[in-house]
Image 1 (tube, rainbow, N blue to C red):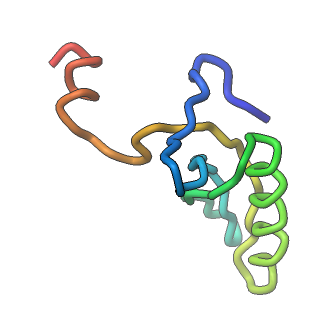
Image 2 (cartoon, rainbow, N blue to C red; image 1 turned 45 degrees about the horizontal axis):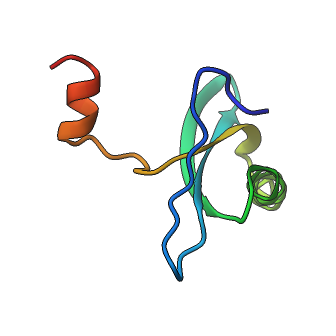
Length: 89
């Protein structure tokens, strides 16, 4: 699933693959929380495929990993002047 409302960007340089941010929902008993990971992939579809595979491989313990969504990003998980300006700070 691609989250609506987010523009899909890719971070592209001459030798670096685009980066995508993936969110997973983790469950342990009645607790749940979310984690994000960065994925190198050539497309959103490839990033989603890798993320689903990753969740499947992580499900070997007591914590259940569920794929949530993937978005493209230019500046993954960063809070900088640009992000503050966009929020009106």
